[in-house]
Length: 125
Image 1 (spheres, rainbow, N blue to C red):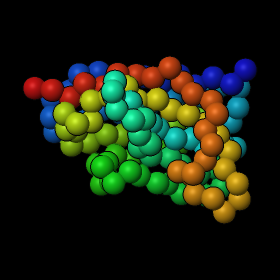
Image 2: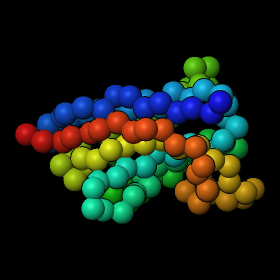
Image 3: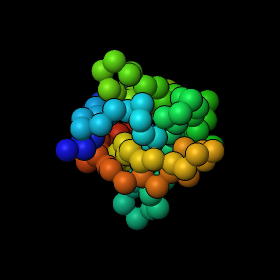
Image 4: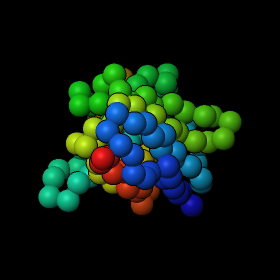
């Protein structure tokens, strides 16, 4: 059974950092594209970052480029999102997702099919 479980969310002050974890089971993270998304009530679901299964290449939304880093721990079947210099606008429910992209397709164009429940991130003073 494919399962994704996020953890690591919480309350942090502006300028602070958090590391989100995505624990995968039922599949191997190196065989799928893994993405991080965020959602705020009343706003569109936003892709934040992803990592490719083929070569580990990464993609970031412009809004987080230079502040967030996605990484993969193959031995433990985990994917992480390190979030630095957090802003109030980063407050959202963050979810990880898995999918398979066509060959030569960037990971941000993956049809993500399996989703975790999400973890809440609040950035506030």
